[in-house]
Length: 107
Length: 115
Image (tube, rainbow over all chains, first blue to last red; front, side):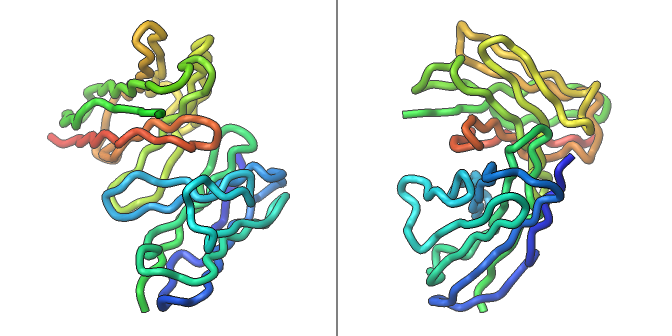
């Protein structure tokens, strides 16, 4: 199975900060990587697919990059509505595996 | 528009089984694989398995092998996930999620396992 190591597990940030979250795959997954945002009590929402493609309707302050084993989600200027938990997902092969999640909290 | 509508919350006793449904609409049902993901209270997302609505083929996470069964009914465009031999650790919200890469999700079904 492919392990996805996501870091950090939690972080405190202020509105306007640039935020970077990383996922490392235990083996190469090409660009079969998606990022999700989940708010408490809500359904996960896909933000990024194919490592760097922005989901329709998602603000352009979100971006993704990487290929192979190293991937990054960047929020260029954190907004109040961005405080949430973020997950990466590898869908290169079964079983699909998620990162452990990164909780972004208000500083 | 794509919609995935899941069945309602369930309360089960340890050792029982639960069957959760996910009715799909707004697209060609047989064109996209459907996955099941669960989330225990306060925990992360866990992939359980996938079903091909066209042929019915499945692939399950090793952790659930022997306890989970995913099926589909093409006449009603519904997929099902049945989990047996329930234990307290199976208390979670269960989601269906459609490919590609889980772009669409059901609203979730809370399954509570308690004696």
